[in-house]
Structure formats: C-alpha cells, structure tokens
Length: 315
Length: 282
Image 1 (cartoon, rainbow over the protein chains, first blue to last red):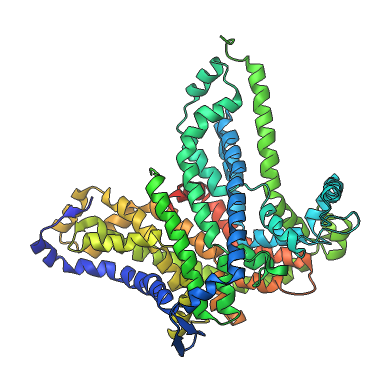
Image 2: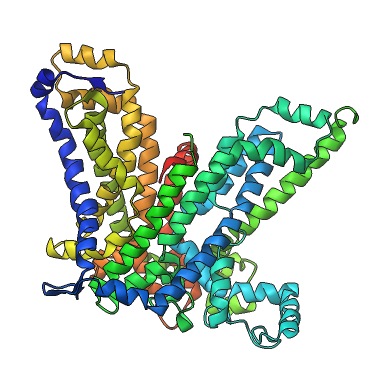
C-alpha cells in the first residue's frame, strides 16, 4: 500500500502531482472527453462539421425503429454464443499439453501455440478471406478433396436449402445465408494463443502426485478433467469468457475486413459496432452514430456490472 | 478396487496419443501460415496446378518477394516507428503516474485512483466517432502522431494498474535511503524504480507493442496519405485490388510479419510469459 502522509508533508511534496499530470492529461483528452462528447452529440443532428442542430431524443427514437440495428443485435448474439463454444478447443489443447510427462515438450508446444500471435492478426484474417474465396479458395478445395462437399450436398438435398450444389463452388462470402457460418468457421480449429497459455498457467498448480493418486484409483481421463482440471481453471475460464463476450460485442474489425463497410451481401454480417462505423464514416451521420455507440456502450456496461457482481475473479 | 498403476509400457503408449492429438490440432492451427509461406513463392498458374505442396526451389518466384518488399517495407517502417515510440512513451508516462500512486497517499489519492480505474470498466466502443472529430480539430488527422498519442492514452490504465502494484512492493528503505542522499523523486524513479522493474516493464512493453502493431481501425480512419500508411491500412488497400496475384500478396503478408518474428526469436521466454500474464488485461 502507498504510504500515508500528513497534510503538511504532502504540501511539501506538491511536485509529485506533476508525475500524474501527463497521464491525466492524456486520459482526460482521449478517454474522458470523447466519452462525454459522445453523450452530448447523441442529442444532435451532426454531420461531423461545425454545424449541428439539437434534436432531443430523435436519434434514439430512430434507433428504436431501426431494423438494421435490431438485426445486428441478433447477429452479434449468435456470434457471442458461437465464440463461447469456440473456447472449448483451447481448453482441450491446454489440458492435453499439461498432461504430457516431459516438461521439455510442454515448453515447445507452448512456443508453437504462441506462433500465430507473431503474425499480425490482420494477416491471419486476410489469409482466411483468401481461404473463403469461391474459386481459388483453400476451404472449397479441402471440402472437395475430402468428400465433405458431397456430404454437404446430401444434407442440402435433405432440407432443400439450395446452398450447396454439386458442381458449383460454395460462395462463402457472397451468399447471404453463408455469411454467419463463415464468420463462425473463421479461425478453425479456434486455438486462442492467450487462452491456452492462461489455462496452462492455471493448470500448473496441479502436482504430478495428484495424477498418480488418480491413476491408482482408476479414474478415467474424462473424470480427471471434470474433477481435477476443470475446477482449477474455472477462474481462468470465467475470465476469458467475460473478456470474450465484451470483446465480441464491441468488436467489428473482423466484419469490416471480411465483408466490408456494409456487412457483406444482404448486410447479413452487420453488427452494432459496424453499423455505428458505417453511419459515421459512410453516411456522415455522426450524431446518429454517437447514439448507436451509446446504446452499445450501455449494453456492455450493464453486462460488466453484472459480471463484477456475480463473477468473482481472483488475481 | 482397481489394480496398481499402469505398467510403464502402456503409459508410454498414451503419451504417444497425446503428442499426436496436440500435433494435429496445432498443425491445423498453423495451416494458414504454411499456405502463406509456400504460396509466396508461386505465381497464380503454379498455385492453381499445385495448391498444396511447396514448389521446387528452382522455380521459386523471387519477384513476388521483391514486389512485396517494395510495397510493404515503407509501411513496416511507419508501423515500427509508431509502435516503438508509442510503447516507450506509454511506459514512461505510466511509470510516473504509478509512482505517484504507489509512494504516498497524497490528498485526492482515492478520487484520482478511482477516476483512472473506472476507465477499465468503460467500454471504449462509443469513443471512436468523437475521437475522430477531436483529432480533426487538433489538426492531427493524417499524422502518425495521432496514432502514437491515442495509443499511449489507451494503454495508461492497464499499465498504471500493474506498475502501481509492482512499485508498492519495492522495499521502502530504498526510497528513504535515496531521499537521505538528497535524491529527487525523478531521480528515485530513474535510479530505483526502473532498474528494479526490468521484467515487468518487458512484459508490459511486449503487450503494448503487440496492441499498437495490430491496430488497424484507428489508422484506417486517421491516415490518408500513402507515405504514412501503417501495415494495417496498407494491407487493407492491397486487399482491395481487383486482379489478385496471390503470390505477391502472400509475400507482402510474410514481410509484414518479419519484425514480430525477430522480436519473438530474441524474447521467446518473455513473450510466452507476457501473454500468459496478459489475463489481467480488461
């Protein structure tokens, strides 16, 4: 803890406030000011220039009736659920690596896990965009080569979707109904470098004796996971879950890069953040964009508060 | 009661399965990078004939790499400038603020601390639109300084939070002895805090560098001139071209990754540790 200090001594140490000044100025200008400005401008008809017109709650009223915004919240909810499920491979990988006997191989696998992090995230995304390409794309080639394509065509025939046809390449990013699946498939097999490392750090506290004792009692590998490993990484899982939900809700970089400013064909990939971006920088409706931003902000804030209340994370 | 521990032979056998499973999963995870590497040496025709395997070394298209380097190296230079300046400034400013919070409970201490901490809870998504108009009115649009300053401001809360805890753990005697010798607070910061916080500064530096390196949203709305493009914006414009020479694009992607690969090779242990502790980030 910081040392208590008498008022008299504090007066003598007044220069210490200068230490805080640069940081406070930066945070004040680039974090507090924009936040206040967003609230203020959400009540205006504002094109981003000097002229603006006070319109009261009109922006929020418009948002209430904005079907694109509603649809974008549906889309983001689907993506949140999918992203939660996509945590499973990381947990699986971490447990497998942890169970190895040799510390040396544990270390080297950890290095391998980190490798995707050293390629700019944007590059990974663009490589996936290339994978999704209908004609040259790697994904369609893999589906053809493994025969999975015929399985898809067969399922399609069963339900009559007309999405997967025998002789036509699958248009992942240009068929509206395939956009959400593409946003989910992206990044297969969904190993999150940071996630795996965090879980491994949590698993580290399990000693080898625990496993030996479990072996003696004839505990199956799955029971070991359920009763030994999962409880120990529960905190980490919760933490990654919370960060992931908040990150997914505010993120729109993925959609912007894969599908463009209008959320791809039919706008099926539109998420709230992208709609805010689109209104501001495509349509020039800065005031309305601020209102959308605030709605999203309120939404995430409520989730954060609920989480802080009910989910306790020990450091 | 089940039987005694498994015989060693069987245990070995299970080890083998684990290795196989891990290698399959990690192998799949690394497929995009394998593809990037091998396609970067092919032209479109070779790629269509033989999409999977690397081409014969004699047929490698070095032209792709020359094209990629010409295109992307200026962007890499800009990004290195932004990320390095930003990281150093961010850590130094945060270190000063953390020192303020860690040494004494000055008047307004509690209020100021909560004012910083509350930013950790606030989602920043609503900020980007007003931030744009703020930068415009400050005449910072289309400059690299905008990226640096906003990056420094954005990293403050997390860095101060971690550094405060760290500075508080430094034995108080050290500071008191220095004060006896007439050292100012600034000298104490330079001669006591910085030398003692090497590892934690390294960790924070890597996290902060990665953040700035990967950012593309801010550069996309701030930068207009091609000479100022960072990797992010540069790649977005490259992606927008109509006729795509995939070999060239992949070579450009690869070159864009080289600085981080170098950083990684030299700081592998620190890198892995930084990312493991990145959990507190929120």
